[in-house]
Image 1: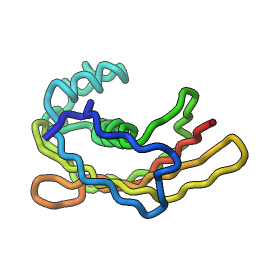
Image 2: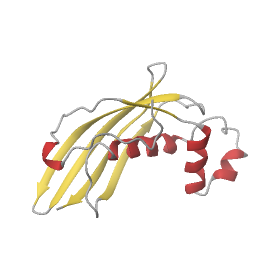
Image 3: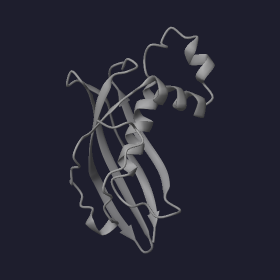
Length: 141
């Protein structure tokens, strides 16, 4: 099991293939991870005083998943995260273990620009989907 700052063997752009699935990465949404996320988005005090403070903010789950996915391949300096589409299905309690399943959705090259779409499903420890979606990144060579 890993935390959301995991390192994996990174693949190069040339090695990535549409439809390619990565091994799932399991990590725990600890109170420390949640606190760091909330402080980074300047929402720590607001979240602590809310009725949802026992749950992980949905975007924190997605941010950890995107962090995990970004370690799966080598991103050159200047890579730009252009968009994401996410669906949230179930609340995740702080301390829960989740597993990120990711695959390459699309891979396009145009001159010195490449676009990559990554698809993900995040599953809780009861095998229930808690988040799914995709994120797009533009890479330059």
